[in-house]
Image (cartoon, rainbow, N blue to C red; front, top):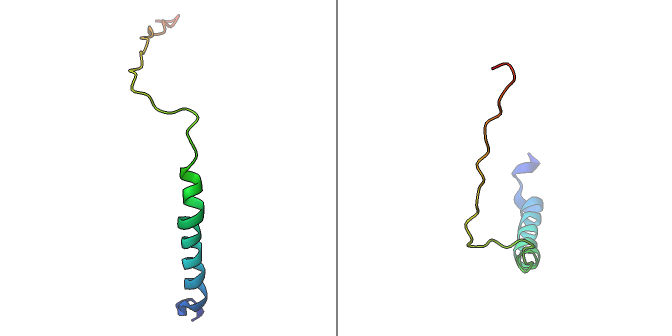
Length: 55
């Protein structure tokens, strides 16, 4: 059963994980958010219920 042999797939998985954690992840974390969160409280407007014509 070839899937039990860890030689080909374990090396590929290890290299993929290292590539992601050492190269791609720092690049993704360096981006700044276009809409950063703020501490302001949001004001919500209360809407009135719809009056249906048949009620």
